[in-house]
Image (tube, rainbow, N blue to C red; front, side, top):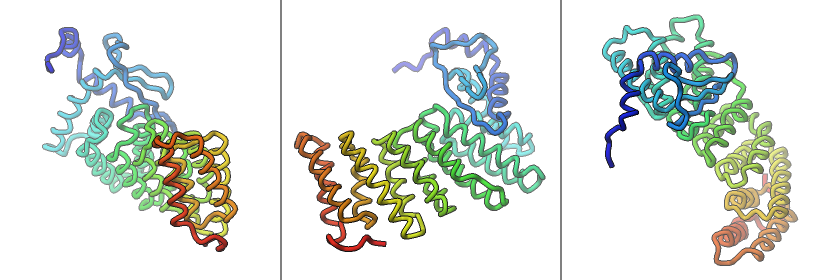
Length: 337
């Protein structure tokens, strides 16, 4: 494959003011709207902009040409390298440069770690520490919920967010974890289906506050029903149910959700492995009655009977039934605590 650039692209690269492009894009990422997240998209060659126009913006919606971002990336990388040689450079400019680097490459560990060091320094030497924390969270959440496939599932960005929440705790800054699951994790789950890093982050949020488990299951259930092939979200729903501390509440919630999901599965003839993994798991952890278990087996057999036996779907149903028959508590026993 040829690595040569076409003449039009070379002309653009030579004519543009790369420093100004970097300043414009970094300003976009640092001067965030009040209490709102940016919705970022990239523009391809099919959407050229006029010279001097480095992005499009309508409210919180932003579109940046990929070429402009690449140009800004090289300038930002040079600035970060200069900072590592001379740490006396302006910290706000360094933060702006790292924002561009992470927008271009969400796995840029050097940029993420530089932001950590600068943020810690800001918290130690400034009275505006809470504002700095919230601004950083706003920036990271904008990347995680953007319409950028790699960013929504970036292990580096999710790790950075967990680290950031730890700082919130250390500095006694309140965070609405329920809001975070609904408006960050779930949005990232929509942007990138089967988003395991996002739902793993949701587990971390529940572990920080176990009372969250009871309040979030209804929202997670709705998400799962709307995205029924997303096994990561179903897995988190099981986790959240099992984290409900009160045993009676856990049985009631688990049994109710199981009955609703089983009914919808029967009605819509869902044979997705994701759904049946959820049903199988709930059926074997002692949260449902014997009557519900019998209904589970009946629906399983019904759907298996109308599914071609050589298909993967039939194997999924057959596996679910045999798993439950193996691990289900003995018939007639009381529901487990």
